[in-house]
Image 1: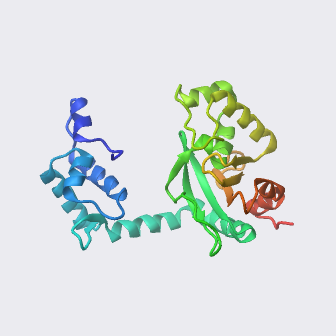
Image 2 (image 1 turned 30 degrees about the vertical axis):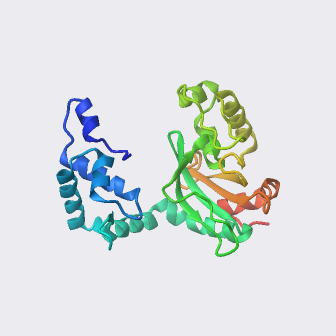
Image 3 (image 1 turned 135 degrees about the vertical axis):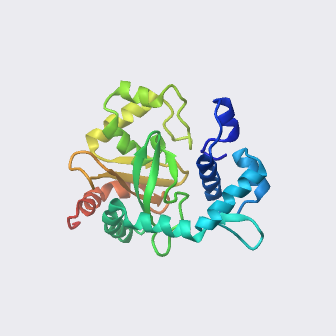
Length: 263
């Protein structure tokens, strides 16, 4: 279901879905279907009449933000992709972090990420896979994972939630999702983990987000010398790159992230 407001949502609030909201809802839904989506399926997804959705798609096609493939299904248009990739490549954090990710990827031969915190999730701003030999992880640039299940997320939470009351307020009474049997599932466990992270200065993911995948993360200070702009992680398959191997290499990882020469 599209994250944008639908006709039903608008009706429930006593208002009408305006044209711009409808077009944005259709655009957001297109992004969920890389293989394309038909008109009827789109109309159901955004809960709007087919003629209305057709007009929204026509507007997007005129702008180059939508197109039809050889099977008549709608996909994101090349102009939208060009703009998105150009924006991403020019972002200051992406430009500054790319050499760091490259150095870490070359050193470990594993996948590296740069991620930021967004509420209860982490958003991956950059990702680099080794040229050969690594199994691709499920993470994608722009994708999200629960913050409490990931090394990057826990590290950033440790900097933003100073005590158990703050952790409890962040959780908001919800049940913490368990991605694996090793995932943290209670406020008390998460608070204790964040205390450890603040003491040691790094965070780990011991197969807490994906079975068989572990990770170590350190803060990245791209925009401020005191508050991390995000976190940088090295992720590896547990059978090939044990977590302790990554922990043992933390001095070099920190040196690379800070711009110094690793020993």
